[in-house]
Length: 482
Image (cartoon, rainbow, N blue to C red; front, side, top):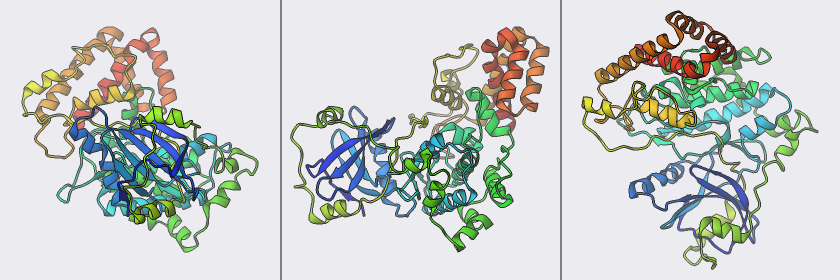
């Protein structure tokens, strides 16, 4: 059981910084006597409204509900006026993203992939049995122990569904791993995690992303319309079949976590389980793989002075005087395993907005192409995607909430934007060229081929108009879904 009230103490040395992201900084710390290591995530609460401070503590509340060998475990935590400190296992093996990036050979053996699939599916089965949606499952958030076993981590945007909820509407996650239903905000459940797992499985088999796009709209189009990518036939039909089932567009056609465990590849592994580390080391004993689990994820060294400046703590080190013996014992004895480097992919978190009445006046507050006929070249993926999706649906976290738009208002908005974009593109590139561009988007599935063909078709007008064409097609698809 995680213990509250753990303070900064002279019992620990700060060995270095493991990573830094939107949700805080992660340090590797070591107990001075036992030499046990932990990862300490530090989230600044300074200048946050009270409701947002409470939101940051939700990660702790979710982690307190979990106890599974393949889920990163919470050891203790502490909340001060300015910071939330989360102590977890330390994963010396890093994360899957680092492994795939450093891997010299393009293929992982099927036995290793099946072993990891079994561990990930079992972890998801556990989370889903508690009505917890991970919602940001991706290689940077999947850590490896020193024995190369899997640990699902980073529950910062996980959601515990209420007993009365069947679907969730919050727009959160990393776009290239988000399911069609979450991208289009049609409401999603635990099957959105299964889609993400399918994307990860494809990446393990090919070291490539399952779905990509030349721009944000094209990424969404590809996820919503493209067939699942081909998996190399060097893998068994059973493994390919279960992976493709996870990537069904319709969430009702996807397996749940137990269904995955019941498939033949996983059942075969469970009948005769084996350790993953020898398989990983056997890929190439002289390659980066063997050293990866030993040295490639060393933390960035920081001095005590740098650390204190970084977190803003006074020179005097706080002691363990407010901890009872059980808390100290637990802290000393429960840190043997893992957390890798901080996520490097952008995770989108929907900002909460005050509830508003459902009126057509809401439409006037939305960004529209007829009022903003150009796309900011400096806008980030998150900026564009949040702006676009917030125009199409509610930002309220639960389906059926009172905020947001009537379907009629949303459809009117889409029709107005489609009409404007059609007129603008037809005037700029000609109706016949626009028709040809539509044909390309419907017939060419490979992103690289599509870019080349659109560049060839639009020529000097490609940079100015290709984004508008993508948005036009996306708006039409969203209208068709209603």
